[in-house]
Length: 423
Image 1: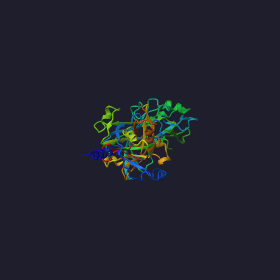
Image 2: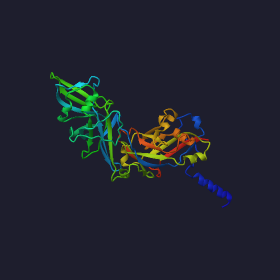
Image 3: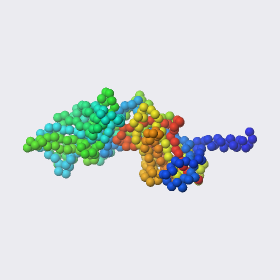
Image 4: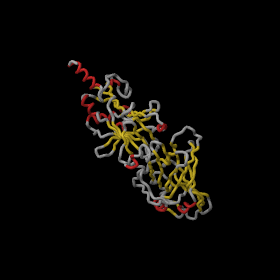
């Protein structure tokens, strides 16, 4: 081969390398910004990603407006149990309440619900939910942070242990507590602190009913969520009093995961471990799993294109057609790693103007999540943000139970970064 032939062959090899870029026109991003800015734009979509699955550790769950109660198991993510600890706050904290000379008739717990997981279309389907309710015997504090792995001591005997029916058309579940709770409603309580010192709160969980997996979405701050005491006053008149699980009452969710004997079993023995993401990556809400990823050759691309101006950067995460993915999360969120070891929101998630914001919503037709990360990529390339990696999480992961697998980095549909640029 002559020198000219060798030179041509070398150029062909370089063009096929991991940062090779096609120079054709593209309409990706057109309409998201001034068309003149990308009129002569080039497209690069071959920058390689690396990714691993990690645990979503240290998930704060205290005093949020919504949470999950239930049990679920599948052949990939194993078992998850979701329960709640809550105070019952006075509905009249400034004036207090007196139960002197009263006769308690019943005490009812109501949980206003916004849905159930797994999602289904048959509104007439009846779910038999096995609830247990216990008294908390340890202080629960409103000004203290509680996490998904925290717990409190509870009484040995439940106030409720039974089945409750739930349909998709129901807006709440209700259950009457055992008469043994009546002793908590005697005397006079001048403030919320007085009452909570006397009655520290409830622990509510749902057990596996032996046939189906169910997790209900509870709205703690909704009108109606809480306890209602039905009693007769000193004159014999029927009266009722509300106790609240809202923002005036300390509450948190506990989410327990059992990965033993399942594909994610490494996390059962080592919470700081990771799972290689070459073939599959795993996303799970409720303090389950998240995805940490990088584009390690991004700066190499910058060295090859020192004058490049990035107009749009979009990442695509594709969802395989697997049974586990029948109820994928409706959207994802993204954070970047900091030098201190923490996580902060990428700038695109806070941007509702440039490129119309982050997106991250699941497209059921294309079976992918698209995320615009233009500003994050720009900051990495100009050196204003360290390239320490980013993390994907299920959006609203404290209050939904969705999970899914996604394609890994060495598959026919890998995590893809597409950049539109000019130079």
